[in-house]
Length: 239
Image (tube, rainbow, N blue to C red; front, side, top):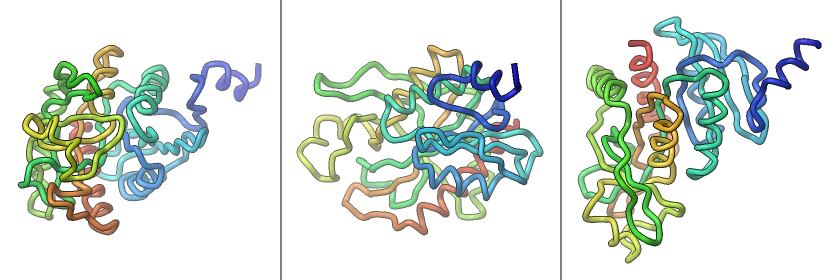
Protein backbone atom coordinates (compact mmCIF):
# COMPACT_ATOMS: atom_id res chain seq x y z
CA UNK A 1 0.00 0.00 0.00
CA UNK A 2 1.36 3.43 -0.92
CA UNK A 3 2.30 5.82 1.92
CA UNK A 4 -0.54 8.22 1.05
CA UNK A 5 -3.00 5.35 1.13
CA UNK A 6 -1.67 4.23 4.49
CA UNK A 7 -2.07 7.75 5.87
CA UNK A 8 -5.65 7.99 4.59
CA UNK A 9 -6.51 4.59 6.04
CA UNK A 10 -5.16 5.55 9.46
CA UNK A 11 -6.55 9.09 9.54
CA UNK A 12 -9.59 10.00 11.64
CA UNK A 13 -12.79 10.75 9.77
CA UNK A 14 -12.63 14.55 10.05
CA UNK A 15 -8.99 15.63 10.06
CA UNK A 16 -6.83 14.56 7.11
CA UNK A 17 -3.26 15.34 8.20
CA UNK A 18 -0.73 16.10 5.49
CA UNK A 19 2.14 16.64 7.96
CA UNK A 20 3.06 15.02 11.28
CA UNK A 21 0.93 16.04 14.28
CA UNK A 22 2.88 17.00 17.41
CA UNK A 23 2.13 15.75 20.90
CA UNK A 24 1.59 19.37 22.00
CA UNK A 25 -1.02 21.61 20.38
CA UNK A 26 -2.60 25.03 20.50
CA UNK A 27 -6.33 25.03 19.78
CA UNK A 28 -8.12 28.05 18.32
CA UNK A 29 -11.62 28.35 16.97
CA UNK A 30 -10.86 30.62 14.01
CA UNK A 31 -8.84 29.19 11.08
CA UNK A 32 -7.44 32.67 10.43
CA UNK A 33 -6.10 32.81 13.98
CA UNK A 34 -4.48 29.40 13.47
CA UNK A 35 -2.58 30.85 10.50
CA UNK A 36 -1.69 33.98 12.48
CA UNK A 37 -0.20 31.96 15.33
CA UNK A 38 1.55 29.53 13.00
CA UNK A 39 3.33 32.44 11.32
CA UNK A 40 4.19 33.94 14.71
CA UNK A 41 5.27 30.83 16.62
CA UNK A 42 6.62 28.24 14.16
CA UNK A 43 9.95 28.35 12.32
CA UNK A 44 8.71 26.88 9.03
CA UNK A 45 5.02 26.07 9.48
CA UNK A 46 3.57 23.32 7.31
CA UNK A 47 -0.16 23.02 6.78
CA UNK A 48 -1.12 19.79 8.50
CA UNK A 49 -4.85 19.96 7.81
CA UNK A 50 -7.20 21.84 5.51
CA UNK A 51 -10.13 19.41 5.44
CA UNK A 52 -13.52 20.93 6.32
CA UNK A 53 -11.93 24.37 6.56
CA UNK A 54 -10.26 23.39 9.84
CA UNK A 55 -6.82 24.77 9.10
CA UNK A 56 -3.97 23.25 11.05
CA UNK A 57 -0.21 23.80 11.00
CA UNK A 58 2.77 21.95 12.43
CA UNK A 59 6.45 22.74 12.85
CA UNK A 60 9.16 23.58 15.35
CA UNK A 61 8.40 26.35 17.84
CA UNK A 62 10.67 29.35 17.37
CA UNK A 63 11.50 29.71 21.08
CA UNK A 64 11.90 26.09 22.20
CA UNK A 65 12.62 24.15 19.02
CA UNK A 66 9.99 21.59 20.07
CA UNK A 67 7.39 20.25 17.67
CA UNK A 68 4.07 22.07 17.96
CA UNK A 69 0.73 21.80 16.18
CA UNK A 70 -1.69 24.72 15.88
CA UNK A 71 -5.18 23.54 14.97
CA UNK A 72 -8.49 25.32 14.32
CA UNK A 73 -11.46 23.68 16.04
CA UNK A 74 -14.33 25.55 14.37
CA UNK A 75 -17.21 27.26 16.15
CA UNK A 76 -18.93 25.82 19.20
CA UNK A 77 -18.41 22.93 21.56
CA UNK A 78 -19.50 20.00 19.35
CA UNK A 79 -17.00 20.89 16.62
CA UNK A 80 -14.22 21.40 19.16
CA UNK A 81 -14.93 18.06 20.86
CA UNK A 82 -14.78 16.19 17.55
CA UNK A 83 -11.51 17.86 16.55
CA UNK A 84 -9.96 17.14 19.96
CA UNK A 85 -10.86 13.45 19.66
CA UNK A 86 -9.27 13.31 16.21
CA UNK A 87 -6.13 15.03 17.52
CA UNK A 88 -5.91 12.53 20.37
CA UNK A 89 -6.11 9.71 17.85
CA UNK A 90 -3.29 11.38 15.92
CA UNK A 91 -1.02 11.60 18.97
CA UNK A 92 -1.78 14.90 20.74
CA UNK A 93 -1.35 14.58 24.49
CA UNK A 94 -1.37 18.19 25.77
CA UNK A 95 -3.12 21.28 24.47
CA UNK A 96 -3.91 24.87 25.32
CA UNK A 97 -7.07 26.51 24.03
CA UNK A 98 -6.67 30.14 22.96
CA UNK A 99 -10.17 31.48 22.41
CA UNK A 100 -12.35 34.56 22.79
CA UNK A 101 -15.05 35.34 25.31
CA UNK A 102 -17.52 37.96 26.50
CA UNK A 103 -16.83 39.37 29.97
CA UNK A 104 -19.60 39.18 32.56
CA UNK A 105 -17.78 40.80 35.46
CA UNK A 106 -16.91 44.49 35.00
CA UNK A 107 -13.16 44.21 35.64
CA UNK A 108 -11.86 42.53 32.47
CA UNK A 109 -11.48 45.02 29.66
CA UNK A 110 -11.37 44.44 25.91
CA UNK A 111 -8.38 42.28 24.86
CA UNK A 112 -7.59 41.27 28.46
CA UNK A 113 -6.57 37.64 28.97
CA UNK A 114 -8.39 35.22 31.29
CA UNK A 115 -6.87 31.93 32.44
CA UNK A 116 -9.69 29.44 32.97
CA UNK A 117 -9.74 27.80 36.41
CA UNK A 118 -13.21 26.28 36.10
CA UNK A 119 -15.87 25.99 33.40
CA UNK A 120 -19.56 25.07 33.29
CA UNK A 121 -21.57 24.00 30.27
CA UNK A 122 -24.66 26.20 30.55
CA UNK A 123 -27.85 25.23 28.76
CA UNK A 124 -31.57 25.67 29.05
CA UNK A 125 -31.75 23.60 32.23
CA UNK A 126 -28.97 25.49 33.97
CA UNK A 127 -25.29 24.87 34.67
CA UNK A 128 -23.56 21.56 34.42
CA UNK A 129 -21.03 20.40 36.95
CA UNK A 130 -17.73 22.24 37.08
CA UNK A 131 -15.06 20.88 34.77
CA UNK A 132 -11.47 21.75 35.55
CA UNK A 133 -8.41 22.22 33.35
CA UNK A 134 -5.25 20.23 33.91
CA UNK A 135 -3.79 21.79 37.10
CA UNK A 136 -0.13 21.40 36.20
CA UNK A 137 -0.49 22.85 32.70
CA UNK A 138 -2.70 25.67 34.00
CA UNK A 139 -0.15 26.59 36.67
CA UNK A 140 2.59 26.60 34.07
CA UNK A 141 0.44 28.77 31.76
CA UNK A 142 -0.13 31.31 34.54
CA UNK A 143 3.62 31.41 35.18
CA UNK A 144 4.50 32.03 31.54
CA UNK A 145 1.83 34.72 31.23
CA UNK A 146 3.16 36.47 34.33
CA UNK A 147 6.69 36.28 32.93
CA UNK A 148 5.47 37.90 29.72
CA UNK A 149 3.67 40.69 31.60
CA UNK A 150 6.50 43.11 31.02
CA UNK A 151 5.70 43.03 27.30
CA UNK A 152 2.07 44.00 27.80
CA UNK A 153 0.57 40.56 28.38
CA UNK A 154 -1.42 40.25 31.59
CA UNK A 155 -3.93 37.63 32.69
CA UNK A 156 -6.37 37.04 35.50
CA UNK A 157 -8.00 33.78 36.66
CA UNK A 158 -11.62 33.21 35.68
CA UNK A 159 -14.65 30.94 35.93
CA UNK A 160 -16.36 30.53 32.56
CA UNK A 161 -19.81 29.58 31.33
CA UNK A 162 -19.79 27.83 27.96
CA UNK A 163 -22.96 28.39 25.95
CA UNK A 164 -24.41 27.12 22.69
CA UNK A 165 -25.13 30.72 21.68
CA UNK A 166 -23.49 33.79 23.18
CA UNK A 167 -25.94 36.40 24.45
CA UNK A 168 -25.20 40.07 24.07
CA UNK A 169 -23.78 41.86 27.10
CA UNK A 170 -26.46 43.38 29.28
CA UNK A 171 -29.23 41.11 27.96
CA UNK A 172 -31.69 39.47 30.32
CA UNK A 173 -30.48 36.06 29.20
CA UNK A 174 -27.08 36.61 30.79
CA UNK A 175 -28.62 37.20 34.24
CA UNK A 176 -29.09 33.44 34.66
CA UNK A 177 -25.36 32.85 34.99
CA UNK A 178 -23.93 36.33 35.58
CA UNK A 179 -23.63 35.94 39.36
CA UNK A 180 -21.61 32.74 39.07
CA UNK A 181 -19.03 33.35 36.34
CA UNK A 182 -16.55 35.93 35.08
CA UNK A 183 -17.03 35.38 31.34
CA UNK A 184 -18.87 33.34 28.73
CA UNK A 185 -17.64 31.50 25.64
CA UNK A 186 -18.75 28.62 23.42
CA UNK A 187 -16.15 25.86 23.77
CA UNK A 188 -14.12 25.65 26.95
CA UNK A 189 -16.35 23.47 29.14
CA UNK A 190 -16.89 20.97 26.33
CA UNK A 191 -13.17 20.80 25.55
CA UNK A 192 -12.22 20.28 29.19
CA UNK A 193 -14.84 17.57 29.68
CA UNK A 194 -13.77 15.82 26.49
CA UNK A 195 -10.09 16.05 27.41
CA UNK A 196 -10.77 14.32 30.71
CA UNK A 197 -12.52 11.47 28.90
CA UNK A 198 -9.63 11.18 26.43
CA UNK A 199 -6.92 11.35 29.08
CA UNK A 200 -5.43 14.58 27.72
CA UNK A 201 -3.96 17.53 29.63
CA UNK A 202 -5.74 20.70 28.48
CA UNK A 203 -5.68 24.29 29.74
CA UNK A 204 -7.34 27.42 28.37
CA UNK A 205 -6.68 31.14 28.06
CA UNK A 206 -9.39 33.43 26.68
CA UNK A 207 -9.22 36.87 25.10
CA UNK A 208 -11.99 39.28 26.11
CA UNK A 209 -13.59 40.26 22.80
CA UNK A 210 -16.33 42.27 24.51
CA UNK A 211 -16.43 43.80 27.99
CA UNK A 212 -19.39 43.65 30.34
CA UNK A 213 -20.46 47.16 29.28
CA UNK A 214 -20.44 46.21 25.60
CA UNK A 215 -17.08 47.71 24.59
CA UNK A 216 -15.53 45.57 21.89
CA UNK A 217 -11.87 44.90 21.15
CA UNK A 218 -10.92 45.65 17.56
CA UNK A 219 -9.16 43.10 15.36
CA UNK A 220 -5.74 44.61 15.93
CA UNK A 221 -6.00 44.32 19.72
CA UNK A 222 -7.34 40.78 19.54
CA UNK A 223 -4.52 39.75 17.22
CA UNK A 224 -1.93 41.27 19.56
CA UNK A 225 -3.48 39.50 22.55
CA UNK A 226 -3.62 36.21 20.63
CA UNK A 227 0.08 36.47 19.79
CA UNK A 228 0.96 37.17 23.43
CA UNK A 229 -1.21 34.29 24.61
CA UNK A 230 0.31 32.04 21.94
CA UNK A 231 3.87 32.81 23.02
CA UNK A 232 2.99 32.08 26.65
CA UNK A 233 1.04 28.92 25.79
CA UNK A 234 3.88 27.55 23.65
CA UNK A 235 6.28 28.23 26.52
CA UNK A 236 3.95 26.47 28.97
CA UNK A 237 3.84 23.40 26.74
CA UNK A 238 7.63 23.35 26.46
CA UNK A 239 8.05 23.01 30.23
